[in-house]
Image (cartoon, rainbow, N blue to C red; front, side, top):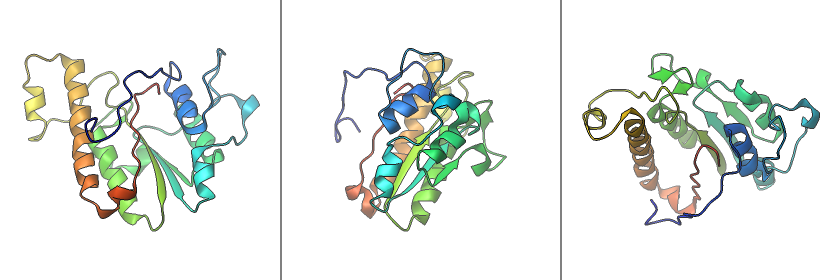
Length: 193
């Protein structure tokens, strides 16, 4: 992806937590040296200028799909207020898919994203938030991931990152085969923006 796209190799994180990164990326709201993230601070419970609201003016639908529970960090309520048409989380996925306490494995997040994309009837803005790169660093074992499990040179955390890369790669292969990929901007950032 970095060869075919644009890679920024000298970026600074927008915060030290996921919530601060989300507000930085999706609202251009910097992480301020304060106790609370704006996602959970009731004193700033108001709509801001967000990508979802800006794109809504141009007839885009918007969905935030999170692999975990959208009650975490007030994600559901906050991003609905920021103009997202849908904020979906753990309840969106089958109960029998591999998950940890943080949410479903990345491959299932991307399968959910495929369903949303295939149903879209208008331009869309889709934000995905995965959780596989968090402790306990576990991912599903099956024929496609067997080679990651058997790599003796990697520790548990490194294997999980390799899994996350594998899952993203499979999603991107699928998406790049679609005819609308030429009209798409895909931005990939790390957990803390």
